[in-house]
Image (cartoon, rainbow, N blue to C red; front, side, top):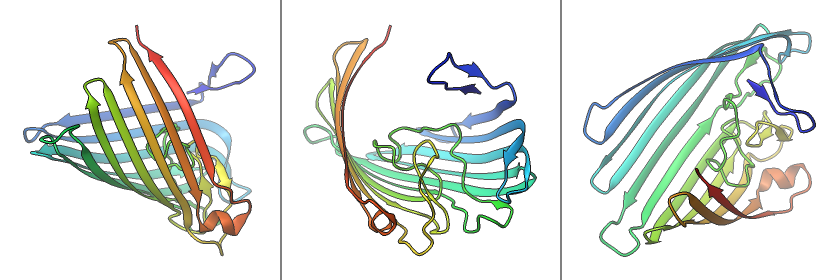
Amino acid sequence: MVLIDRVRPDSADHADDFYGLYASIKPLKDHALDTFLFIRHDRDNELRGEITSHRGQLKEYTLGSRFRGKRGAWDYGLEGAFQFGSRAHEDIEAWAWHNELGYTLADIPWSPRLGMEYNHGSGDDDSSDGEVSNFDNLFPTNHMHYGTIDFASLRNLDHVEVNLTTKPAKRLTLLAKYHWFFRDTNKSAWFNAGQGVIRASGVNASKTLGQELDLLAKWQISRHVESGIGYSHFHAGAFVKDTGVSDDANFFYWQTTVKF
């Protein structure tokens, strides 16, 4: 595990180890089934538990499976993961779920693909019972999967997405996504893509975090150079309005990637 330091050169945390087993088979043509077990062991004995007096190590196991495939114009995928183990001598019991469905209209101009997704990361409905139930979105950020602005992670989250992808030209891809974000439980916080707390739980507040529109154009200039320009707008939902400042957010970016 490498720790990011904004002032000094980054250094490894030799007390935090990560292991994994991953197996994949193809039971049918254009289909794959993956199974995985990820193990994280942080030997820092001062990690905090839910109960203030609890200190100890993290021993976390993530066991899951993923099925994905394509038949004709349809593509689809399912993935589930269960987490167990202990943090500061408190039991971990969390889970996550992902499913997606898409349809490609290959016979019309621009070959548009229409898609939808649902993602769930469990939340903790009792932050003082000594049982950790917020799903750990391992080593974030997972940028762009839950909105480009990174206002959400797979942790105390219910996420619905519809998307449209088109190719007006061989090297040009246009992508539009619309997201709806909700907290799994109103007794846990709103977490950003890095699993940092944006807002505390707000037990009497709404579960509705908001909605986001993402627009992106990608141009493959050459084999080694790709450029992209994007715009995103986050519309603050009832939870944001219930708990403080509730301005909408706008995000504009342009990036170019060079690969050697």
